[in-house]
Image (cartoon, rainbow, N blue to C red; front, side, top):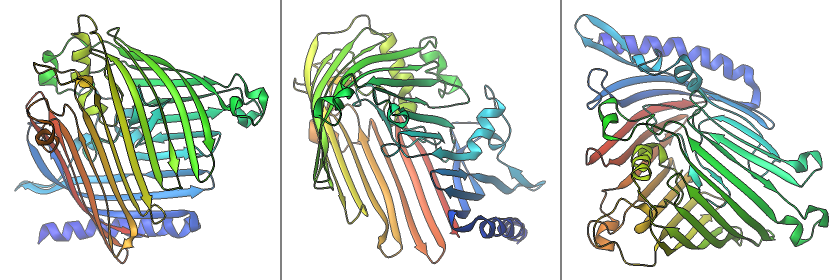
Length: 452
């Protein structure tokens, strides 16, 4: 009974404050009051998970091109022992070993943005990065810094500037860092349009781009007990260049043709050529031919990079010399239906050659699958969700089709929401395969939020 009373007291204190802010914010303001639980690593033993209750306020303000969202979440345990009525989850508020005050408090800002990528010639977003690519994805493809949620929120940066905003369409740039407090993953792409003086003609749209991305500390998120398993932490990088031409850009069909090449720290080279775009306003497609040297990891900085950055670093560092070139392929297809209420995407890539005779840690030597599904709010009464499945090294352990559904070497995630009135119940989980322990790392949360 004491626990229930204390919980209600905290909620009563927080909710009126949130409601007052919402009333003052006008039509551009919304907020959510969250109540639930998270499974988090134990402070005494990070290999074990503990259940922590949470109470959070997430205000969101939008004014034209500007937007800001905060994540003010308190995670706690009531009476964890008879002598302690309330214990706050310390890593949320106190820097731990190797952390600074910026690591802890910058992520309280969920995001700050100005402009939108792909729409505005200038955009900047600080905070959570969900899906960011550079060039045609050979180096950076759908990079995200949100993979440790709800355990850990990371404050990053993505930025873009097109010279067209200054009536100088000849150049532009995009940049990113995964963690602004540490500046670990950092890089960008600079491009020029050398024929922009030809006005609106097709050659005027030709882009020549140069991309460079570095990870200054690949062992940033490696458990202290496992650091000794990897080479001494040094910076690793990938550099490359591309030619990209938007051939068609109508509402009925868009088509980009491109060629891109890259070099990794080990000296391994990779190159791709292909096309991509959208058909009839709701079908996304892509096709590539690839030539990759043995040991070259395509899309080195991908959506799950933070999970596997230490293993990729170790593979690159231990590669004595690149192997021979092998041809490969990539195909992607996606659908966006009912005004984006349903989104489905599938990408499959791999080599033309058969799998290695002996098992290898070379990403490019095996097929790779990435799939996603979104059911947006409004199509089904009260239910909306997102789900993703990404599988690496398909066929390394058994046949292609058996390995395709084997969760080993996979990242599986889902967030399911049920809305009734202003209340949203959310169940989220992520299972990611850890090659070091040969087991899954599990992250899950259950929460109820009131949106107003």
